[in-house]
Image (cartoon, rainbow, N blue to C red):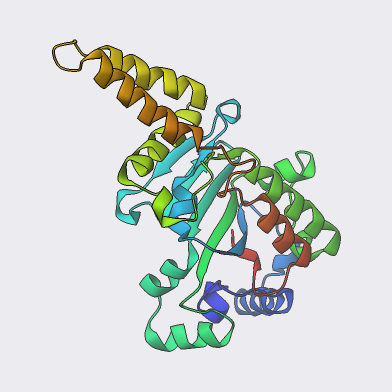
Length: 270
């Protein structure tokens, strides 16, 4: 897509086929009968929060044995999880456009559907060994445009996402008066703790234990009781959300089901 139209924000089978046929004509090779040694397949998802917030709130399931890498220059706007078969990437697609494209190209992408005011998150799988999708047999280039294979790619991209864990979160108060500085600090502590498999009750006990650790000369018994009551009052109002606000499962499933041309497709082949 970069070669043929200068960007990969939009994708269509027709454009992909045109590009392959053009390259094949230039080098006088029927590329459609070639084995694909690697390819990327991804979707762009419109999200409510900043893409960076979603990226920072995902981690790999320990059982998946994925190696996570965060490149410093991306400042949290791109994270990768990799094993021997696949390189998974989650990144800010809108930021990517702003960094890599000039104004003329940006205008072209905007005409194609990109809104610079919206938040776009890209979930992408770089298949290092495409044969794992074909029972160990090589994947041919013509397979990539076969409708039957589209279901395979969509299902696997969704399953690859299920190898990650969206971090749990506390239900956020909607009233300003319920968001004191102490409450915000406690929310951060509580979320960090529940993502380390501790319950809110264990957080409470941990804080009580810290209060009890101070000598009576520093905090009297009355002082300690007062602080315990404050902690209890704050934590009693907290509740872990039933589903993580960072979970992209439903959004991803919807995009893959609808599969509009401007949201899904191949970003590169080799």
